[in-house]
Image (cartoon, rainbow, N blue to C red; front, side):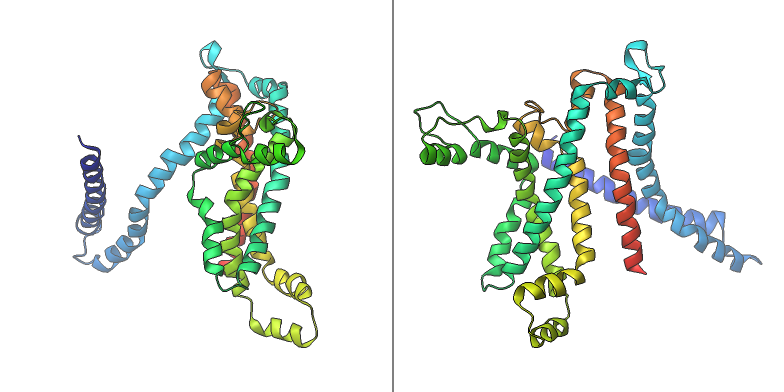
Length: 333
């Protein structure tokens, strides 16, 4: 079947199925389970109205159970079994094996480094861009250009930046911008930047910072525009300088938004995979947890250690998710 026709058929079946489910489930509820007739008509109507929301939520609950809850419990189960022993229960042996591997601790170390650098710089650059673009006439154009990397996939961004870091043999024209500038300024031979330990991790971080700065800028720009003008005018009347207004008036009023942006980028960093996979594949001491998990699951075919590393990622992400949800609920009250 033609892919376009297949897509249309899928949409028709999906939408039609939803409509049919809601229509017939309501008919079943109102006419069979709780019929609105006889002496109990009033009670049945009330009962039907109490059940109806759960009827509408049932597809979503089933979908969440199938695509979210089941994979979590299955991953926990797999992390406690050994494939080589036919799926036999081995307790925490996979976690012990994982903890004994230098690559795992390299991945943990790199993830912690990413957590320190990327959210801080992305948020700082986004805040700076939001503040500066609001002060110029062509600010909207500047914001569009800064936000544009958000429209690029992580793999696409990795390919772009891999070309920036590209190195050709000495004596030939360098197509990599970084090496072209380096050779022109120093006269030295081009460098294989992505093979230099520690520095290569920072070069990979630049890619994610480049992408996430646009996200931070858009959110923080909206927050800055929401600051009451009266507070800024009062600070100007009191003789405050632009820097004092920015750091002592504006930032305290948008601190909550800054934290939300920071934690959102932190979640992205904890799950980072695409950039590392496409640019270094975890070589030259650039391994991260998600790429380590991929290596164990799909290269080594070791579902036990691979699932154990997935659980570690989930445990790192969960507290931040819970914190974000609690803050969102507080703001809604």
